[in-house]
Length: 239
Image 1: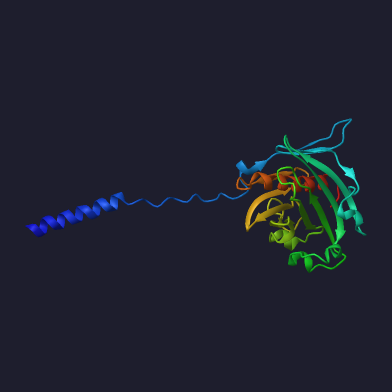
Image 2 (image 1 turned 180 degrees about the vertical axis):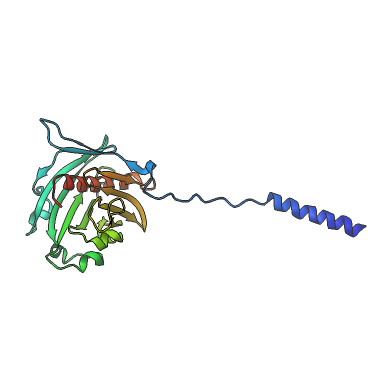
């Protein structure tokens, strides 16, 4: 009889422990970048008496100025083409953006990812600088991209560039998932932070952009400047 009582008590105790054990917390799966909550509106203003300006969400641009801005390193480069610059503004910040094309040999004394360093010296690249802002006064960024993409790169979302500062680095790929395979239709540039896509832009006829909620405020500003530069470039016909 005692065995039965103790056996029943033990069974009840184990059952209570099982009931009171904490249940594993379900990990919410990241839905990815290309969803509606991450979509950011891209618009262009082109009035009768005003020059073209762009907006990407809360970020707006000035009109563009042709050439290379004074007192910048590219001013000393030998080979530069299709250069222009503008400012990106928010309610609290403003920073300069320079866009130009230059051959790969310009960066012969600087480290580049394999996708760029293996290119011939005369291969044209896009070079975009994004100036420091008051919230990070010492941190400026550069975006280096292949100017001429291949269908293989687009079909397979290959790396075509790099966005970096002195302390951070994002991989830039390009794909045509929203267009037709083996075409440049709706070319999309994707920005990846430690392998995770955090932003993307289609700078074509009808621009589209996405920014992941996991990108912090400072990175969002940089990404916005880079994407606006690509849209401006496309709108001005400098491919």
